[in-house]
Length: 276
Image (spheres, rainbow, N blue to C red):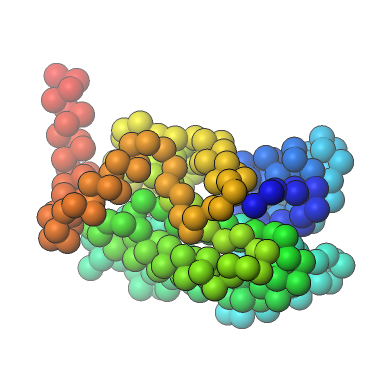
């Protein structure tokens, strides 16, 4: 698409930190108005104030728990109450858990599914009519390279990302010809707060080279500005190669490989050998 950022009012979920915050800053710098959604009200309000002051754009901050039932309708009502019509959407909010599935808390997993799967579907459905009516916007959904791999110790998270990848690619095909650009972005390890609440074992996720949130957003916006954006873009050359390799492996080989990669004991052993 020919990106007309100044004509956009973009709703960004998970906007208080990490990739969501990087999207908000990049879009405000390009002249887009924003609706920022996240749970942490104080941080969200501070960011909104900074973006208004720096870029002279309209920014609405809505503190909202995306695990709540009827999330799409409730969020649409909250936005409408502020007199805003959304033209574009970035489904960024997500969280993960890191443990063997048998050790996971079922309530925590239910919340993970609500935020990572149900919320992007319901929010997209709630705002789709007004976005199609606007006819020149975009929907970007954050999937991840884990969508292509079975991920032991992150079984629900990787399954959620596989779901949103398939959902977004299907929507890409349905929306062709409407003027609405749709695609999924698949980052790999990124330097954010994502692993903070997942426990020390999750440090294995960022033990290698990581990309920055700004890297991921630059990849997404470059894809958006292509003449004919495809349904998916993978961030980073090494992640692209990893996904290509996964397509050449059997499912069992892929699952066994990822079990080794995501095994905290293996990572600890490698660190010990390196330091000795």
